[in-house]
Length: 418
Image (tube, rainbow, N blue to C red; front, side, top):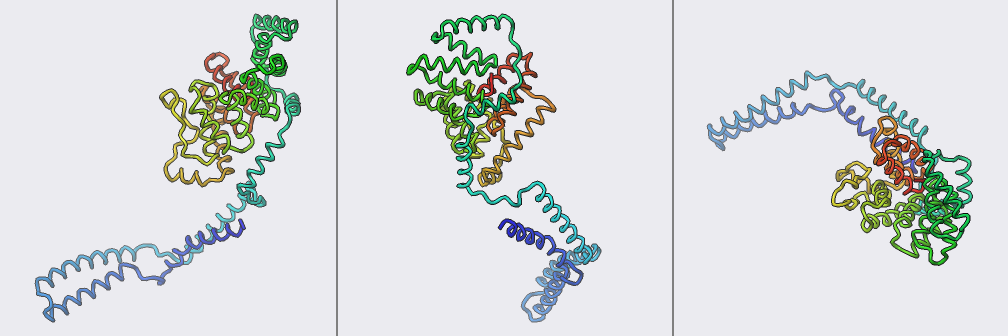
C-alpha cells in the first residue's frame, strides 16, 4: 500500500511539473496578447457601426476609441515582448523530464538506503502494545546491576582526606550499632554522594527494615532513586515497587511522582508521563530539583503526548526556568505538530538532543545547558549515555561549584548519581 501511494503521489507531482512544458510547445497555444488585440479591434469596429446607426454620438465614439486605443498599444507591446522571448521547445520538455527522473531515482535510492521499506505500518494500538511489552520485559534489579557492573561508570572526583576519614568512622559506628536509624540514614546518603551506590542501597534497605511500618515516603522514594542509579537510570520493577509504596504513604511525594513520569517516558508512554509531570509543575515549588528537571523536557513530552500547544506555568513569576527545548512554532507548524505521529515526534526529539550534544561538545555551554542535556538523554531512553555526559560535565565544571551543583542535581534527578 505504501509503494502504491508513493507511486501515485510521484506521478501526480511529475505531471504537474511537466504539463506546462507540454502546453508551451510552439503553435500549441495562442499568446494572450494576440487574443486581446483581436478583441480590441472588434470593439473598434463595433464603435464605428454604432456611430453609423446613431446609437452613440461622435463625442462618445471618440472617447471610446481613445480608451480602446490605449489598450491596443499595451497589448501590442506585450505581443512584441512575447515574440522576442525564447520559445519553449520540445527539447526543454525532455530536459525537464530527465531532471525529474534523476530526482525520483535519487530519492528512491536514498529511501532504500536509510529508510525501512519493509517496515509494516504501526497503528496506535500496536505502538501501545509494544510499549506495554517493553514495560513488562524490563530487566530485574539484579540483571540491570549486573549489566552496569560489566560496564562501570566513570569514577567521581576523589573527596578530601578528612571526609574519607569521617566516612570510615561512620561505617564503623553503623557496624557496631546496625539498628541505629540516624547512622543508617547518614551512611546511605553519604555513600551515595561518594558514588558507592551498592553500599548506599544496602544501608537504605537496612534503614527501612529497622523502621518497618514507620518508614517514611521519602525513605522509600530515596531507595527507589538509588536502585535506579545502580541500574544505569533504568527504573526496574523493584524500584517501581518502592515508588508505589512511597506514593501510598504520601501521594504528593515529589521524587516518587517524578520517577513515575520518568518510568512512563522510558517505556514510550509520553501520554502517561505528561499529565504526571504537568501536574507537578503546578503544585511543586519552582526551586525543587524535580520541578527543574521536568521543565527541561516538558516541551518534548508534550509534543510526544500530542499536546504541542502546552505552555508550562511560569517559574517564580518569570519565564526564566520555563524555556522549552522546542523552537517557537507558528500556527501552521503547531497544526503540523498535532498531526505528527508519536514515532515521528520521538525521532524529531532525538535529532534535537543530538544537535544540542554536538553543539555543546564543539562550542561548550552553560551548566544549565549541560544539565538539560543529561535530563533529555534520560527521557529518550539513553540513560547510559546520560551518565557519560554527566561525567564529562563534572570535569568541565570541576572548578565551578555552582555549575557542578546544577550538573549533579540533574544527574541525581534522573537516577544516575549525584
